Length: 345
Picture 1: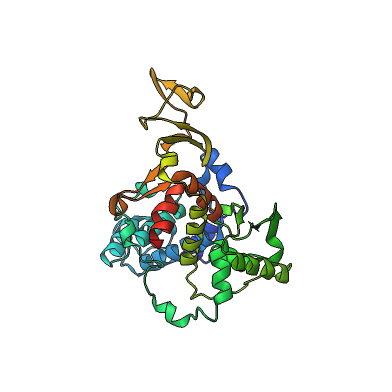
Picture 2 (picture 1 turned 90 degrees about the vertical axis):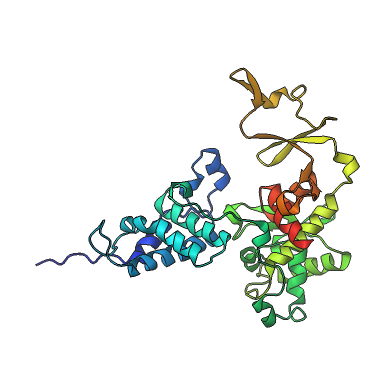
């Protein structure tokens, strides 16, 4: 007499589901062009974060009493779907930060192949003023000696690597071009996007990084960076260095506007009124219902980037923000202005 095949646990089901969506090494950018980027997961860090929160969710569901809608305790991911809104509300009531709740919602949306808007609950609004990461003194700082980790800190401030990238970078990733030095970053990058980032700092710092790379050769430079190192704050220092190297005085760009496509500056032009000018920029506009409008994917914005809300009154040079954004491995200049540079002020 045959035996029924044992049902996989909820955590196994969640892991199997997310595993099927892994696309490590594939281009998220190319997928975006096809509007298919929401179906897959492109980095290990995202996968690990999503898996962790999905496991929290299904374990919570398993602890809930039998539901009248299914007549028993949950056994499958499909049955757990009935509890999504209740779980998110429980996390809100527990006092989780808006950023954590948004991450949890995104993880579940990936698990169920939908959008967070499909969940019948509004998540709290995320505000920059609520961010505590890399601000002030954290408990882990007590277990981290800046003196003993001076080499690591200098390297991070000069290169702006993420933690995962830092653990994989090798000495032979160093590139020299026209007397300037860069790192070719290909492993553990966000969204699988590779980049070439400049090494910045004073003369002694740059010399130190170059010598460290050459000494390491094909070996990893920092294979096991301390978990207590505040890598994000070092990236903030790097962002400020890049931005300051490229920023212009306001007089140079106060009347300048930029045409942007695929996060690249295509053209700059002057507008004394600071309003969009169609004349001279016809190639970037189309006519819809008798009205001239920018072609999808193009932006026409001021060179002066003005912050909002609690940063109102702060402005930046958008061209310099783009330089910092590319060096950090981001694709939005707003991230640099509202998070990295703001956290340094």
